[in-house]
Length: 139
Image (cartoon, rainbow, N blue to C red; front, top):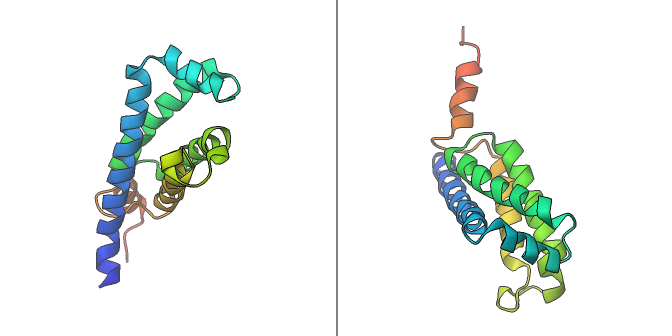
């Protein structure tokens, strides 16, 4: 039973994580990359003027990739690194609780994204479809 449920559980996780990243990346663009860069700079993020559009783009493109299940190892690792950066530069000093600006949310996103990155993507994943197409036919 677990084997049959796993692809659908991964699908739900992939879509949920993808929507979260897509939303947060879009908000960085809608709020203005200059404002995002200023926020990054005030948090001590190096090269904030470069980091802001890079992170925003990665969250949008990576969010879409997670939703589609495409290039999961690549985008999963990159998004995990973004979350670890957010943890180190912004949230760690505030403790664990998200209510105090802590790191529990970014830690959950990092862990979930890393799991999805190396899970094969589950049901309806582009990566799974491409792997099946590349596999040699059984004799």
